[in-house]
Length: 277
Image 1 (cartoon, rainbow, N blue to C red):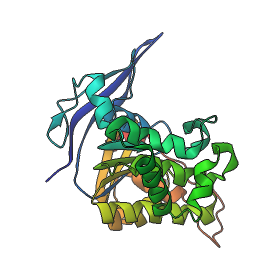
Image 2: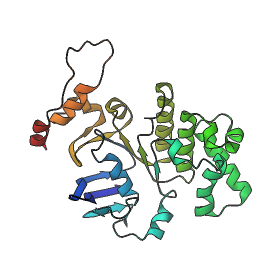
Image 3: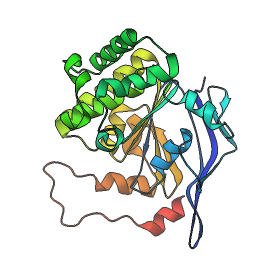
Image 4: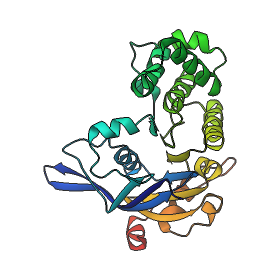
């Protein structure tokens, strides 16, 4: 059974030159699985995630023939009802913890805010729940990290704190927007293993947004390839390198490989891509 059903999702913004559509008729479904969305910057990946979370503010416009989460129609859901869903049943890990965490609130208090808002837990139980979730994302000294401010932790630990904040209420759906792009290579695998473990152990649906094709192919079950606001190809993650669309082939060709020598870098043929959509 699908957890999320999206049909003909469109996101528009007004400009001085008329209305611009940044997501153009996107359709997909998501069960309790790992679905990757890949594409170059500006392809509409992040806007898709924000639209699903109800985070496109005016003057932006979101429309869809169907936008349903676990039987709940999200298209005209009041903001108060959306706030009850966010964090509790739907969560989104943003790209860089430096810009997502409040710099003047201690980490433990920030994570505990979700518990206070959604569950009204006693202070002692709330503190223990925060310590438990910090341990679940492989932070070795949760008591110490609980008391720290965001600027006192590394980028990798900050991203783990963000994940802890998003999963403390055990949501059904997690949207991870470039969760490893700001991290060192040595930390990326740890963060992805944490996400994978949470999905498998808690039965969540994961929507992983990234520009890293190899990473998504390795960690997801299915992949959507976006170009200029549209899905141009969908395939099983293990068969990404068998993709046939010109844009997907162009992305794959542009991935650097170790010990290779190229006399010329590949260039995407935009005219050919347009013909293939």
